[in-house]
Length: 409
Image 1 (cartoon, one colour):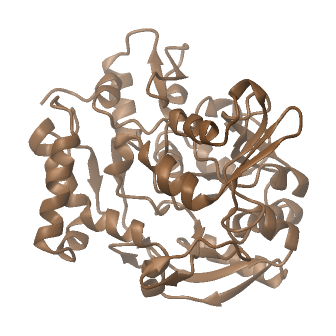
Image 2 (spheres, rainbow, N blue to C red; image 1 turned 180 degrees about the vertical axis):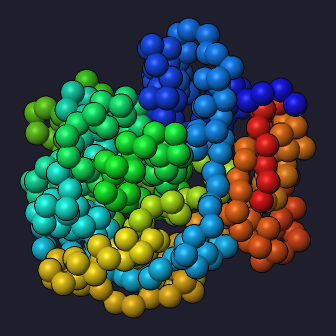
């Protein structure tokens, strides 16, 4: 089998757009740019060496994910789990501004105000283009709240990470599951990551929509891009509404069930459809919407926000205990059976993944390397008909080209 290359990862549609490759490869050989499909993708300006391609292949989270043996129980469906809770920020402004119950924002504010970290690295709306994302360094409560809320659009928080690692002080990193996994992979080859990163916090992710999805939402709202002064996908309540504000002060809104449920989720990149980790398995803490349900399905009526909070490492659990002692959040006990009811999409996606990967393998000839992630155990929970349906759908969607990567459960 041919060696894996960065070009092969991109051409095979395994890239998640995190930007890690641009950090790994020096001399400005790689940069990130928006593709015609509306996703952030690496642009290769100079030919990469065999060693550089090997470095990318072994660290790119789109190509390689592996759990190493640890001291935390591993659930095949939900990953490493120390504790599971639901809760919300007791500061009403924090709870209101966050996408769910404000748990991540409350954790970050506590870290900053306690001096546990010097700053927080996270993604927020660009200061120059309200439809684009950029990495923000927050150093105060006000900074955290300014950047609160989901951003359902491409982002590359691992781009130019060298500059961040060169800054004095320690930081907390917040990102999508693939971003956190990429940072953990980088730690294997760059010791500064472990030295500088105090905590990694992830949020559950159902996939990254292309920029075209956002433009479709904007069109439905009746707002031209050049008129736009501010755009938010969620926040200001739970689940919150997509909101466009024009330069002349006009406000147009769309409910979450419409914006995400009928538009954005139809624009997901291919890699997200074969993702084994939508729940932040490599983070210290992972948070999500703790949806209330009816008849087995989440409800999206506006109400007071509630977060799902999973401690995935002992260090993450210690942080949650500190935040509870400071009375920044209120929590209730929860179990994984309840998580499955709150997050049925995540349950179904991981359970169906082995069948989807089989479809990709049959069409493309090879697969990414996902190791020790419980995929076989998850697949056994699915019925034969459901597995066959996912296999067939994945086969149809896969481009007939060799993805120069490998898979092992």
